[in-house]
Every structure is written in structure tokens, then in C-alpha cells.
Image: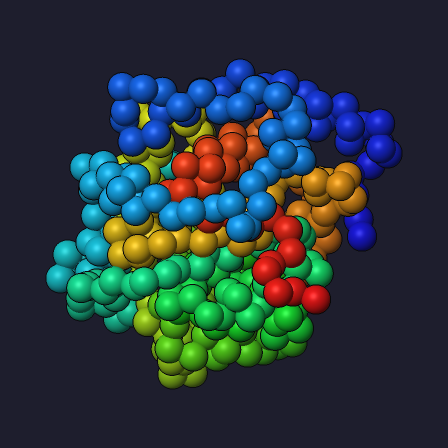
Length: 345
């Protein structure tokens, strides 16, 4: 497994610095007048005192309260995708995070816009949101994940060869345009194009959620994927998030004193899922290079990408997001699994 250079001392120093910064954070859940001050010991961040699965209890009252508050900022049913009729081919769109840059709505993009929201009228008893942390390896969580009513996966992550730990069920799969470069070598030859085609075919009727309007630099990659879907008649339901979604999600969390720069895909999915899921279970959310027992953890379970969020140039604040999600777990608003699943052998 690849780790950042610098050895254990550098890792420990970086982690201690992160823990120190995180211990100064406060989170107010649901705009309550009573702030939830997160546990300030580094032990709580390391999760050595985390609740065991048998201790967790779902707090339906809090979950419904959070849903109601988020609805003041966004409506997942509407904001999950721009719809046909709201845009037409040739329309000029300013990127959400690069307002000085624009893109034109292509014929292919227009053809793949849904006519109605893929989540219109949908409600699920339980939802799993599967992040891509290496904490999933050897977790045995696959069966538990697949048992949920609705499963959300991030960034076209492979599942078949890791099915024991991550499951195979997928109902909504996200795809940041950068994944085409990072995981499929920008389709530099037919081999990589075929690999992407196989991954897209494996979605088999799932919602494919592509943030096409967020940042410049991804237009060409989005077009490649759109063309592959249309030319190969791939069975997916495409969705392209609304132009207001990112700022609305960030606004909700900032209001609750979670000072994120740009929400990660995982946090976006949790925020959206509160609208249509009664109970939300998170797997594969772990932004630290070592687990509770100080064993090394890969950044992604399926590749050798290294921990980039420690860089000042990273658009994400993943450990702070994680701390907020852990607080919600402790209150019963969601369940966060960061180790082996119940019944895993």
C-alpha cells in the first residue's frame, strides 16, 4: 500500500496538527439555539472511544428536524438535476465555481437531461451512502450495504472485485468529470475507452449523477461520457445537478457552523439523501491515513491515490466534514460505520 513520503513521524505530525485544528471546531446541528460542541479530545477524533454498533439508536425526531431545515436551503427532488425544458441546446452557462468561464449546452447533454426528476415522489426506508476510503477493505460490509433500500456510490468506484467489503448494489452513482482523467487515463486509447464502457454498462439502470456545470476543465470529459452513453445505448438515467445545489448545500452547513470550503461528494449525497431516506447509513467515510488501531488506511479502497486534502490547495475540508458526521452519528441522525460490519467474519 502506498503512503505519503516522510515516514511515520511525518504522518503522526500531520495527523496531530489536524487533530489540534479539529478540536477547536464547533458544530450547531439544525440551527438549534443550543450548539453541539464536539468532543475536544484527540481520542474522539481517533475514534478509540466511538460508540459500538449495538449502542447506536436512530433518532427519528432529529432526522426529521434536519430534513425540514435542509429543505429551507434546497429540495433534493428538484435540485438533483436540471430538467429538459429549463435549458436548450446552445444555452450559455457560467460554471458554478468559475463564474468567468462558460460552457454551451450541447445536443448530447440536452438529449440526456431528464424530463422529470429521477427522485420524484421517491422515499426509502434505509439508504446507504458508500464513500471510497480504504477503511472499507476487510470490513465485510458488502452484504449489509446491499441490504439497504437505496444505495448511493461515489465517482464510478469499482465494486465487483471488492464486493465482499463494498457490495454490488447501486441505485445512484456519481461521476465527477476528473474521474475520467484519474481512473480512465482520459480515454487515451481504445483499452481505456472499453474499460469506461464496461463500468458504465455495469450501472444497469442506475441514476448516473454528473456535476457538469460546477468547474471549468471538465466539459470535454462530460461530452465523452455523454457520447458513449448515447452511441452505446447504455441503460442509465442521467442527472446533472442544478446550478444552485453546491452553494445551497454549503450554505446549510455554514449556517450550522461547519466551515467547509467546498462540500465533498459524500457530504453532498448525505445532504440530498435526507430528503428521501428515512434512515441513512454511511460507509467508507474515513479521511485519515490510519485507522482506530493506527494501521495504515488507503485513501481509496481501489487505487493508490494519496491523501491530498492536507494541501492548502485542496478544495475540500474532509476531516471537518467527518467530525460533523460523527456528531450526527452520536446523536442518532445517521449511522457512521468505520470498522467491520456486524456479522462480518
